[in-house]
Image 1 (cartoon, rainbow, N blue to C red):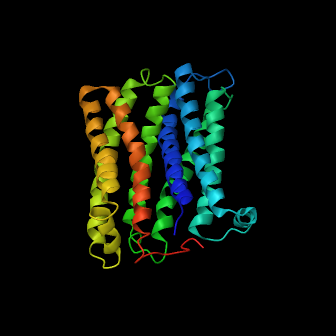
Image 2: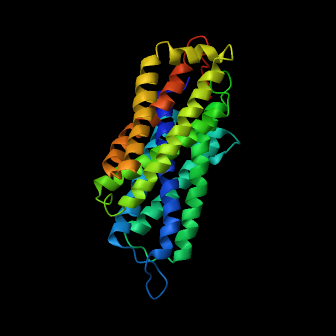
Image 3: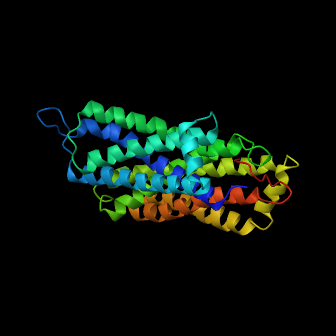
Length: 302
C-alpha cells in the first residue's frame, strides 16, 4: 500500500503546483503593467519582486519536498535512474517528468523575479504559460495516480482527481497568502488577496460538495463501502470529520466569507492555515481508508 512518503509526495506536489498555477496566472495579468528598460526587459517594482519572487520560491520548495519524498520512496538509486532513462506510459513516470519540468520552470520564474533578470516581456509570458500547463498536469496527475490504482475501489472514480485539483488550487492560494504575510506583501496587494479569498471560498464550497458526493457514491459500491465506513463512522472518523471536514474545509470557508464581507485579510490568513492542513488531511484520509485489511492492495505502485 502507499507509504507515508507517497502521501507527502501527493501533498507537496499538489501544494507546489497549485501555488505555481495561481501565481503564474497573476503574473500574466501583471506583466503588462510593469515598466521596461530601453531594451524591452522588465523592471520589477520591489513589491512585485517580493510577491512573485518569494511566491515562486515557496512553490519551488514545496515541489522539491515532493520530489524528495518520491526519491526516498523509490529507495534504490538504480530505480530512479531506470525511471528517468526508460520512461514508460505510466502515471508515476509521467508525474516524475512533469514534476521535474515544473521544478525547472518555477526555479527560473523565481530567479527572474527575485534577481531582476533582464527577460523580455514575451519570454516571461511564455515561461508563465508553460508553468501553468505543467502545473495543471501535476495537479491532475496526483489524483489520477490514485484513480488508476487497481484493487482499491474507493479510488476508482473521477471524483478523486477532481478533489485533488480543487484542493491543490485552494492550498496554492493559501500558501501564497502565507508567503505574502511572511515577506510583507499582504498589505500592498490587499485588494488582490481579498479577491482571492472570494475565489477560495468558492473552491472550498465546491470541494465540500464533491467530497460529499464521493463519500455518498462510495457507499453504493460494496467494496468501496468498507473504506467509506472507516471515514464516516470507523477508526478514521475523528480526523475525517474534525480534521478534514470541520477544520480543513468548513472553518476556512467561513473565514474566507468573513474576509470578503468585512474586507479583512486577517481572516484570509487564518483560513490559509486550515486550508493547508486540510489539503494534507484529504490525501492522508483517502490513503489511510484504503489500507483497511479487506481492501488492501499491497504493492499497488509496483
